[in-house]
Length: 318
Image (cartoon, rainbow, N blue to C red; front, side):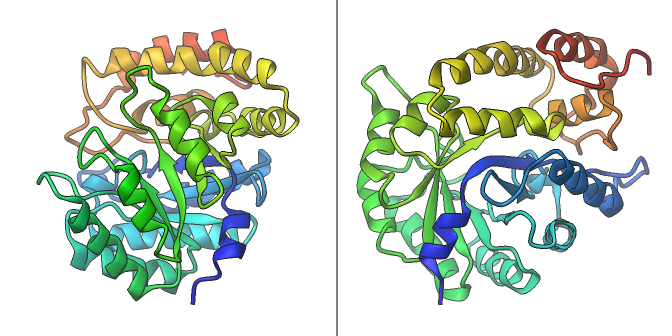
C-alpha cells in the first residue's frame, strides 16, 4: 500500500531531470558508468533528500529513444548510486497502458520511490482514457505517481480531471505547466491543489508558485551547477522571493534563450544540459537521433552563456 504521507514529505525541492549518457559508438549505447558518476556529482553538489529529487528517463533523459530494458537499467543505476540519499523518480511516459503497468512494477522492483506519468501522446485521448491509464499503474505498484501535464504534446489536464486523480491515493504530485492567457490559470491550479498534491513548478514561476504552496521546482541548471539549485531552493524557503526572481532572470533566462535558438536547428530536451555538462568537465554525450548533435554548432555559444551567468569551472579550451 502506498504511504502517501511519507511520499509527499519526500517529494520536494529541485526536481532534477537527469540526462541519459550514451557511449560514442555506432549504437549510441547507454553509458551506465557515466550515469552513476553524474548522480554522484549531483549529490556532492548538495542535492539530497529535502532539497531535491532525481528524475531518471524523463524527456531530458531521452526516454523516447530508449527501449524498455534500457529505461529500467538506467533508472536502476540512478537508484543504486543515489543509495537512499535522494529520492528517485522513474519516467513513465508511454503511449501504452500495458507498458506503463510494466514500468510501474519495474520502478517498485528496483527501488524508485516515484514514477512520472503523462497523458499518452499521438492520439487525442480523453479524460477518461487518462484516468484509466493512471489507475492501471496505481493498481499495479505502490510507487508514488507524479502526474505531468505535457499539454504541448497531448491532453491538457483539466481541473475536473485533477479532482478525479486526487481520488487515487498513489497520485502524490503534479508537475505543472499549462497554457496561460493572462487570467492566472497557472496560479489558480497551484493555489487550489497545493493542499492535496506536491506541486512541482515546470513554468519557471518559482517565487509565485512557492508562495502559493508549491513544493518543487524543475531545474535544468542543476545538471552542471547543482549548488545553484540548492541556493535557489534555500532562497524560496527563506521567503527571499525578490532575490530568487533576480536569480531566475540572471541565470535561467540566458539558458532558455539559447535553448530557444537551438529549437530552430533541432528539437529535444536535455541536449543543452549535456553540452553544458561537457563544458564544466563532466562526463557527457550527444542525444540520440532524431535530435541532432548540437555540440560543434553551439559549443562556443554555450561556453559564453555559462561564463556570462557565473557558472563555476567552465573550461576555457576543449
